[in-house]
Length: 477
Image (cartoon, rainbow, N blue to C red; front, top):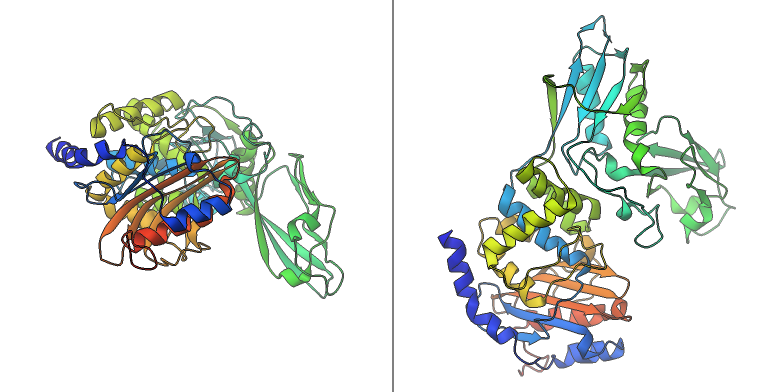
């Protein structure tokens, strides 16, 4: 407890300053925001030394709670690394109720989900191949999916923004398979005059259109997805009424399955049969019988790798899986309120009762989530001093190079590791900037305004200002 207390004390000097009257924004930032028609009272900013112990370099409305959008993932991922450790893994145990003889199992197979955020198609394929390695080719019974580790309310995918087929709207699940999404791959075949379509994972019981016509010769790629005229709202069929331009070459498109609750069962059965496996029963939900011991377990990548996917690519459902895992690890079963309570307790132990965030679902895909710039900056300073700092830092997008910052217009290419966030009327950025002097700064900026989407140029100007140690282009303060 003493190391955490010492970090808090070292930071204490900064936060009295952060609560003072708003400081003038740097001229380049102010000008960019003016062009975007974002008023000064819609932005919250804090720039401070990463190691703490000194007054912030810039503090503007830093004490005001704001909606951070996906920047909230920083809180979830640091809490996860801090509480669980970077080597933490999720196990998905597989149970065989019976003895296989001659490749046939007279009994059921059970898969118990424990919240693995990265049980993607390739790893499901390996799990089923390992099951076949137990001498099972035909299951004369059922494959039973146990999802009881997560007790989450029924989720309507269209509830947040009316886009139910967007993968980012997928709900968390104890047995989350391939993010409840289907990846459609398109390969043009000029000689046949069509584009072949591959669906991963294959979904049992769903009619999947294997090909569609190519567009007229010479057609530009353009908005190729709209040209497909995809018909994806029917859980029993996925097809297309349009055409595919050969100029696009090979492309892929990930969509959420129209019946998310049925996705896991259809994916497991579809892939099992594609592997040559036989099944006389069905794939259904149910509990693992008491006393039955697992035949083997499929193990996830380490948390450090999962956190990298969450932050680099702002994966919402993976963030929610980690968030709920905090409750699962603490209580033995995961509920949203249990996860919020686990994170609140962690925050209180780290930072006391000041400035607690409103985390909602842990991913930032929320209208209720709130955190102040000073609270987030304080957390980032604590993370800088923590043993898990390398894992958190390496998970953040690098300005102008990768993740959600690969198209950043900042001149600080390669010198800023920052998480971005965006929703309707919300834009945010937070993380670390390596300045020309060799010093590292924590940077937090959030805009809550109807013109938030246009504020990115202001964020780039702030990143550049910070990378110059707070100097203007002319070299003056």
